[in-house]
Image (cartoon, rainbow, N blue to C red; front, top):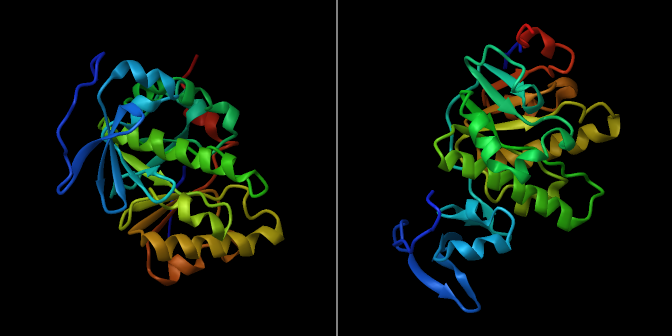
Length: 263
């Protein structure tokens, strides 16, 4: 276990890009073309004017969707960050060398990236990479809210990756039952990231977190795990017992000012 200190204006018809896929027009959806291959679907757009119907629909082009919930797929990454910087601190940090952006903070601090994805992409290019967003999946939230936030996390991460930005998939479950959609677009045999800051503070949550991590590890078989927060109370014992490298970055809530530029 290792501890760290800290497209043009009009989209054109395109030919299938995944082996064995055939493009087809979906009845009643003239703006959307799909390619299907097993349980994976890839979106191609014929008419850019229709993209205004759905928020951030343009980001879906050429992404693969997985599972019954059609969650955007993030591809594997093998890089380990040297340090992490929170989105809310991105413009305040002078030294960005080796730094990756993370979103392990309150949703309101980064909600702007859903309204302005180009802001996300342009800011991310100043860093070595990003951990995909972490819109909250509260245990007691309604299912549509949890599914929507999973979709948003994966879409923005996959879209950033498609634009050449190195991206580690953030993995967030909301109980074992959420695995069917929350893990659908997470890459297998890849570095993944977990946000554990504050999740094991309450004793009743620790068994839940340990169980979720076991489900995650057994499902996606990560080659390494980047953790933001703490490995306290044995919550990471299961992957550690499998000799999966774990890189723990302590929460930087109280130390962020050290990396800020001098005014």
